[in-house]
Amino acid sequence: MGTHLLASREILVGVTGGIAAYKAADLVSRLRQRGAGVTVVMTATACRLVQPITFAAISGRAVITDLFDSPEHYHTEHIALAQRTHLAIVAPATANFVAKMAHGIADDALTTTIISLACPIVVAPAMNVRMWSNPAVQHNVAILRERGHHIVEPEEGWLACGERGKGRLAALDTILEVAEAALATSA
Image: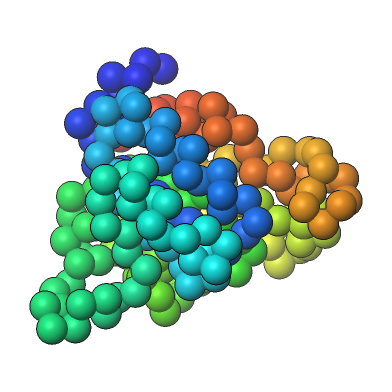
């Protein structure tokens, strides 16, 4: 797939609180280099691992971390963002986020925005190998697949916990390929 598919597209990048959150900064940079406009939405736990200022500097935009960031000028930003988004990528996606998405739980800025979208959604889970293989997580991933979401399965390798197994965030090139294919099929 060519990089022209991302040029002038509005991409939402959701970052959840997995240790691989730092890799999302490179993902945002690569999307920008391909000409996409990128808005980052982070969970509270992600903000504990990587500062929002990192993503603001790379994306050139304010980072959304809370539904009520500016209560004196409150507007339904998650709806406005959903209306202008061509594609969403959640990387890394924790087991918690996957469960919330599978069951329609919208209790923070990211899940509320995701549930408002009518565009392709790419989900790239990353977690411990035992978490990934847990039947509940696999059931939730199956639900997302059935709904037509694009799942980029984690890779085998060394994990932050010191174990080896399937759970590493997929290579960014792989995530980008799936993102471009999702856009190509939705056009």
